[in-house]
Amino acid sequence: MLSVRSDRIVRWIGDDCAVLRASGYAAVSTDVMVDGTHFRLGQAAPADIGHRALAAALSDLAAMGAAPAYALLALALPPWALEGADEMLEAYAEAAQQYGIEIIGGDFSRAEKLTISVTAIGRIVTRPLLRSGARPGDRVYLSRPIGGSGAGFALLGKDAAAYEHREFVESAIRRHVDPEPEVALGLALAQISEVTSCIDVSDGLSTDLHHLCDASQCGAEIEKERIPVFSELPAYGRRLGIDVASVVLHGGEEYALLFTSSISESQLSARLGRPVYAIGRITKERGVLLKEDGVARPLEPRGFDHFE
Image (cartoon, rainbow, N blue to C red; front, side, top):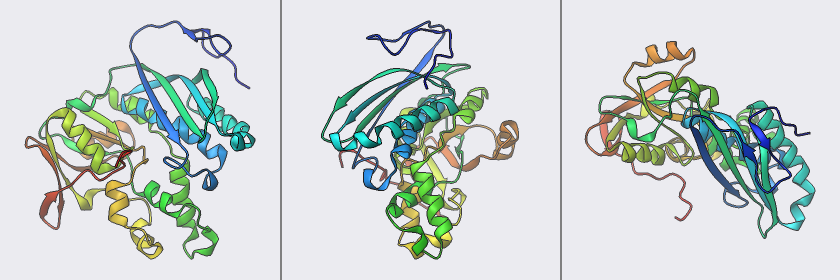
């Protein structure tokens, strides 16, 4: 059951608009998820879809160093999807409660494909983290191991019990359908002045690193062996028909944070009270390079592209 927890909300669900008491700066983001593009309804439970829709929007707030405050949900449903709508909405509400975000409104419509649009609004507590602040010499960081979501997407619809490595299959699928936005980390990074830029890994490491470098008008060189990889993916991925290098470098919907800082991995991890992973450096020369076995080659942006 939804209820108002904040005195900042003057009017919420039930009027044509929500009315908020505003002060300071806000971060606002919209995410759209479409059946067949972002998920496969026959292979994902309605509850997972509801949770994942909000998690994607919250990851954008995390990348900006914003504290989740409010969310609006627009849901377009084909008639055959009505049966799972309540389960989806309940999961969405549970995720909102988990991350301390108020659902203040939205809209419903009929459509040919199930489409979910989430608008998330966050409060800038310290400062906004931008993509455009990276400087030559900064270290490039990832917040956690990647590749799990891409592997999980490849394994969707497979019967985990049929595999010898079913625990890995189940964990990879769970990483894809039930991602965890790095909200607490984003807030912590905003408080560290030596953190210079940030983006979330939604389209893939290769593509999102290009986005960050383009915004900062710089380049980057990363080391393949330093990229943290989802647990047991190198051991089991190839046996399960997964292109490990591809899902690590180009797999999307990881929702890890990709950021830059002038301080070392050990110092930054100590200040954050958790591990983060330095994978390379920002360079003055434009372009992104991947160094492997001592040889640096261009890393093309081959992550998710809606219009490819």
